[in-house]
Length: 132
Image (cartoon, rainbow, N blue to C red; front, top):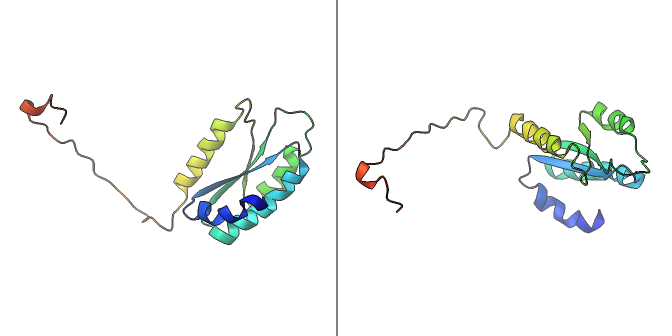
C-alpha cells in the first residue's frame, strides 16, 4: 500500500466509485482493507460508492472466509463480493454492480434532475451521400 499512497488523492479526486480488493488467500491483504477505506474516507468522505472484493477464489489455501468479510463490512453498509480474475468468476457482476451503484447514487456535482432532448437533424437529399 505504501508505494501507492501518494497516488490516492489524484485517483480519488473525481471518483464516484472505488473497488477495494483483497486476496482471499492472504489474511494480511484483508487487514489492509481498513487502511484503504480510511484513505478513501479521508479524501472523498461519503461521496464515493465502495465495493469490497475478495479475489483469487479459484486458488487453494483460503485464509479469509466470505462470512468473515460479510460480517465485518456488509454490516457496515458496504457491498461485499468475491471474484476470480483468473477464471472471470463474478467479474462482470462486480462491474455491473458498481455501475448501478454509481448511476443510482445522488451526486453533489450534478443537478438532481437532468434531461437532454435529442433530435434528429434532417439531411438534404443532395448531401445525403456526402461524407464531409
